[in-house]
Image 1 (tube, rainbow, N blue to C red):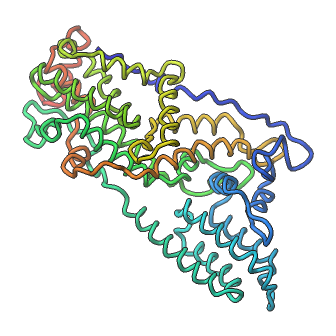
Image 2 (cartoon, rainbow, N blue to C red; image 1 turned 45 degrees about the vertical axis):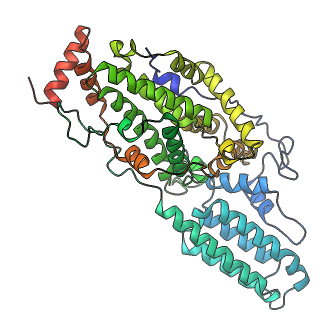
Image 3 (cartoon, one colour; image 1 turned 90 degrees about the vertical axis):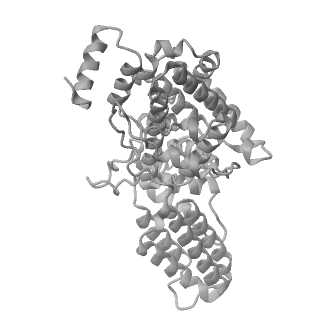
Length: 466
């Protein structure tokens, strides 16, 4: 039988220790991590470091790191306004006569920065005021080269298209994430068992991977920061903005749904031989997910099989060939802060870097653990140092973790989608926890007084019996 994972095991923090936060008299504290980028500095200095000039352009890693972390201290639209103001001021773009030679050196760099910003953080530009800032600053350099106006038009077109796609979202879980109660004779819609839709473990693993990548694609990097933002202690008492983490939260709901779907499919059959068959099917699906690099579906399947209503089915598990399951369970063992999983993840990440096909590039991390690692990094290190400087060293580590995820989520799924299977994964009814327990007790009778009392209580509350 499987070993039930405790909640405490599932939330073990990563081995993250705060960097040295000893301030110095100057802007920097410690050695710079990027060429010219300080490990700590005032917010004004960091903003200045983002602004290009005729002879300077910030490193790509710095741009991503600062744009990701800056929202902890300043709203994106305000940051854009300040960047545009500095560009106008430093390049004297408000003068009647422009230095065309200097503007021609500066213009491409400005457009490159705006392109990188809109490409990576398109949701920062959902408000009309932000688009207004873009048009204003580019309009000031356009007289020096009409190509700038054309480039801005292309940039805005790409931005609008990206926002439109993000607005559509992936196939929703409307109503599907709400578990149903157990009934003695489930309606026909509940009797649609997964094996009747897909009996090939490899095919289901591919379709799960398709769903995972589709849902991941809609998660913006800024959501990882916004999930843990409250307010900047040196700013006002109000948060910088209302948290916008809908896609991140929807992905966590998808994981939970898959756990309950697995448990429902196992508990539903009346005969233990059928239940054992379903368990062995999911073990094979989980193994294929591991081989593909889809660790999120793998963990959801293992978690579903480790739920108490499933793990208590001793007669059912006695008919299961569990050797393959124990191997997979060992890979995802929470012991040692998920040491085995982290080793497997590094192996998949290395394979992805050297891959020659989309199939080998797939890395879908165990998402809840990724979020917890980022959470503990955020909690373990101060955003600001005692002298008020921004702890940029912390945000370099944050950007490293989030940046790796962004690379993984951009992989094109090499598997053709089967609409009938993905529709079932999204819409098949799932039992609530009480419903799972009742189905489990109906399948294999309660073994002790505690289970008997719970069974009686569940039958009374759910089935309306005494």
